[in-house]
Amino acid sequence: MTHSSELNWSFSSLGCPELGLEEIVKLAQQYDLSRLELRTVEDRVDLPELFKGRYGNAETLSRYLSDEGMSVVALDASLKLVGNTPSDRDEFLKFMEWADALGAPNVRIFDGGSFTPELGEADMEAALETISWWRGEQAGNGWKADIMVETHDCLTATRAVQQLQAALSDPVRILWDTHHTWKKADEKIEDTWAALKEWIPHVHVKDSISEPSARHPFTYVMLGDGEFDLASTVDLLRGEAFQGTVSIEWERKWHPYLPPLGDALKRARELGWW
Image (cartoon, rainbow, N blue to C red):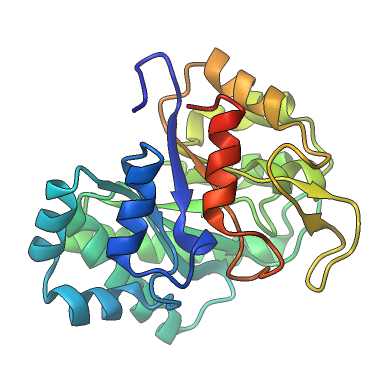
């Protein structure tokens, strides 16, 4: 298990889309992990509906996870700050109800919009409107869980994140996808961290090589076999005594050419991550 001087590791269930929750829990236990980031379960992303059908209510699910020594550190929703519909928002709010009941501190959402070095006016306006809407819902429902926005599209560049945060009286939480800011925004890991660390409760790590794949101008590869400097990234977070969650985002759901998640977890342990 993790020690106080070590990082708090997890993995996204995006890496094992075919598994049911009980199998995901067993996989985590096999590799001495106790934190779960849930994105897909039984090859579904509509987790609130799936949980309701399987467990009936959050209390039953929470009791099961507690008995297994597991905590949910994040539920991953598909809402985008920029470019969402009333239906998208309704679906997202279902995640918040479960996250709060399960004690999950964060629900991941996307930034949406378009990647540019600086945040465009239209994307800024849309993002602020969505955040304002969300905070009204959060206050009205008394929810403790909050959103964290992944560095994925319009907020991939550090400057864009800083612009959004400067426009808010209360900054939003940021899920730092280390691969995206490095590959897409061409930023050095230490520079991104220094600029954004006060807003980051959750970090994604993965690896790639510069060969096009079906979905990207790069191809994801086994941890440590690619061009991303994972060793320095892990060392940086350790050196900074990062208290949030570091999650292996093994994107096998979207990139089935990747080997099973268990292979990546085995590699992570071989690399001495925990």
